[in-house]
Image (tube, rainbow, N blue to C red; front, side, top):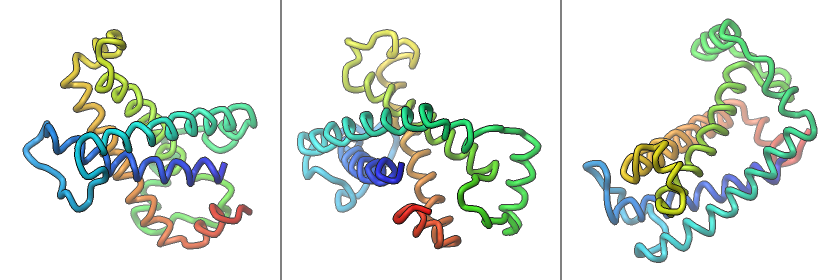
Length: 186
């Protein structure tokens, strides 16, 4: 599980920075990303980096999902969910009173955040397929109401992932013993 975490970190970093270079070639919003924080050097190079990391992200994501489902980790880590528990834990987190005594158990905010991240990962992959090969994936293109909307879905899904990573890093800084756990295990 730890290996899939770190492989995803590498894949996401490469896809985000190369994706920013690809985005700059044909912006869908009124801004561009500074070239200094993009990867690939030019559009063709960025596309090569993006697709290489996409395959790593896809294969690693499948391994992660299969490991979670087959080991029973999915049920033990992410379930049960409740709105009452989410509300309670979110309020505790905002007050700075959320306990992190047992790092093997996720609180309700973590459960929802990680499940949302998985959903965003699936959405970014599916929308990426439409952006890459809209003719070969007409059903997906139709579900996303066309190529241009698939680009918007792709952009906002990745924006969610980037925001998640930023919050994730802040939380690791606030609870630094979690870093030791993800590197060394229990």
